[in-house]
Length: 175
Image (cartoon, rainbow, N blue to C red; front, side, top):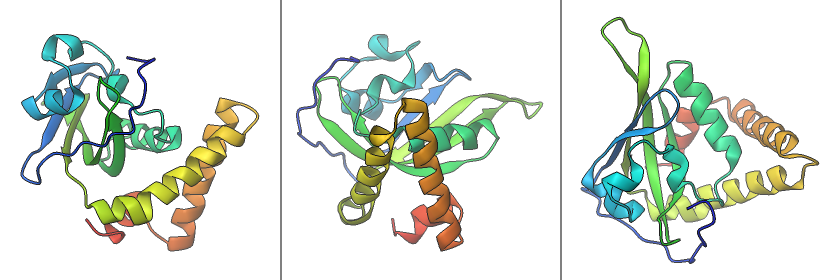
C-alpha cells in the first residue's frame, strides 16, 4: 500500500463506533477490531503482522508520529488527531488515544489505540491548518531528518507559548 494513491475522498464512521488496534513493541499489528478493518478497507489477514503504518496517510506530519512514539515508548499516553488512509486511497480522520500495554511486571509489551470520530469543525478549523504548517516545515528542509527536527521544534514552540503539554493542547481545542 505504500504506493497507493490518495483519492481525495474522506470517509467517516459513526460517533458510537470505536476503532481499536494493538501492536507489539515494534509497531506490528497484533489485533484490530471490525471497525479498524472496515475503515482501513482491509481484512485481518492483510493487517496482522504488518506495521501499523500500513494505514499512514502521507499528508500526516511525521513530527506528530515522532511525538506520539516518544510519548508511548516513555510509558505515557497521548491523544492526537490523525488522518489515516484506507487501502483504496480514501482518508479518514480520528481522535486517537494511544497507550502502552503492560505485563504483570509493569513492563511495556506493546501499544493499544482507541480511536473515535472527531469533531469535524476542530479538524477543519484547527488541525488541518496546524498540520499543513508542520508539513510545510518538514518538506522545506534540506533533509527529511532536518524537516522532522524543525517541525518538532515548532510543536515545542507552540507548547511553550501556550504553556501546555500536547494532550492539554489537544483538549483545549475541544473534542
